[in-house]
Image (cartoon, rainbow, N blue to C red):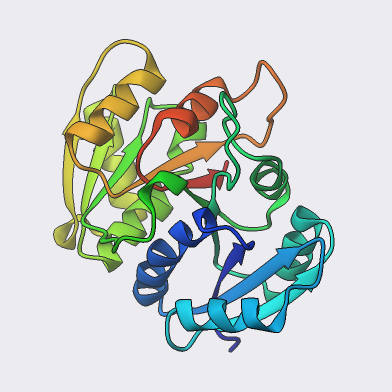
Length: 242
């Protein structure tokens, strides 16, 4: 049986390091090894790699790659077959941008869920106690239920479900996914702009992670809610392709 892996792409920026505390905790929950991939368009100096190796969690490996960042990250993902990719939404200041070009290309082509971390959280410790999953009763949003429930159960975290429209139907669907006896589920109803309400609830409920389903279409006018949430959310977001 192959080793479970979480892929963490980094570049030479301080902002990218914000993904490491999130990846570390997810690795512990998933019992997965962290594989750090340093990607840049030039070969990093030895001193730069040594500094990075001193920063990453114990037991992680660092692989330096040179080339177009998104292409190299996807190539690494194809080789490693990770359970998750954990990376920052962007590492350069780009006002009005939902995601940087590298994160966008990785999200659109990744073979696994991608956890996107806002660089503003810096490298402070991260804990997973509250998992927020929006649900409006559609098959698309239902695709996020299983990974959210399974992750919350393994982490002994609370599963907070927002925007539930059909409570009885939802509970039956959730019971089919995993036993509810060991999972603390709380449901919150809200009205208004979906993205704004989800971001508001995440902040109010101190969500540590959001799990969102996505149909895989990024070009305008698609994925407007996802883009708005990525732009405004202050916590990491796991994006699951529906």
